[in-house]
Image (cartoon, rainbow, N blue to C red; front, side):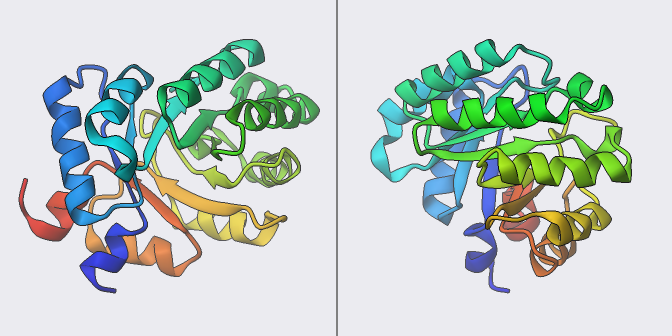
Length: 217
């Protein structure tokens, strides 16, 4: 794959708790120059980025991040605020307590509620695979599909492990309704990126894309 083809699948990411305005500026400038799929930034910077960089920038932000145990009402409100601020895409974290309790109907209902609050914007659902067994991962594929989300996403990047190719392959076998796959967390080489894309991912979330592909950082 060419660099340009790879960048078109990258969610260029800066989600550190200590992210500064200068960090966000650099991320957005790189995204526009390199034509990444989006920037993924903290909710508190969405309005700033939209005002400064305008409609050319595809802005993704995170909801219920990184632990996912906010109530549905809070996630819905976060999503409404993010969209009002100018977010184009929403990456929400599932409630892992509901998953561990086997309350998959609640998980599906929450995904559906956030999708509705997103008002037609793209919704990616982060399932944090490092905390799940295979049956839970399979069940979550159904939740994400039935809930009307656009993507399932492997990881927050803040858990005990990141994206694993085995999980992407499992997702590809169990998703329905055209749900796509985003791999994120610990992806730090070109070989990793190309492997995940070849095995069915449509998006890659990484803060290292520029370093990987251009050695500029």
